[in-house]
Image 1 (cartoon, one colour):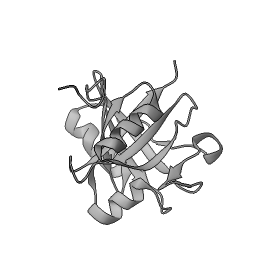
Image 2 (cartoon, helix red, strand yellow; image 1 turned 45 degrees about the horizontal axis):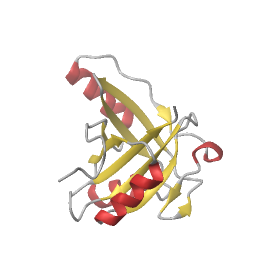
Image 3 (cartoon, rainbow, N blue to C red; image 1 turned 90 degrees about the horizontal axis):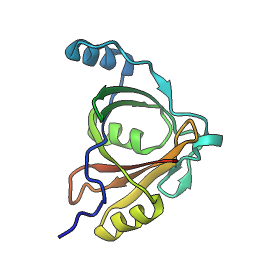
Length: 153
């Protein structure tokens, strides 16, 4: 029996937070590392964010990243606009948002996940225009959101 994804190595764990500055300070203190910089998710002209199948030009978030070898931990503070990030915060509060996996062939992998029963809830391009992401709702089966990450070569 094969895996749904070609590469099942965990690439990232994402957490939704209300106050990224306060939370990253606590994580940095806990891990004994420097606080990472906080960045914005980027402008819509680059990110082309879609939420629930519709353009979402106002959907943005603040993010920061901690690194543990090949594993990335992301903190996300959404703005007030409708998004997968805002939805998670409003419905479930702070905490785990997603587990992310690197893929090649984003659309093919979205289709495979949808055939498996997941629902695409948000997608967009990276703020540096060097890749893309997709959030798939797998709450019925896996009790979480799965994020697919694809970097341009």
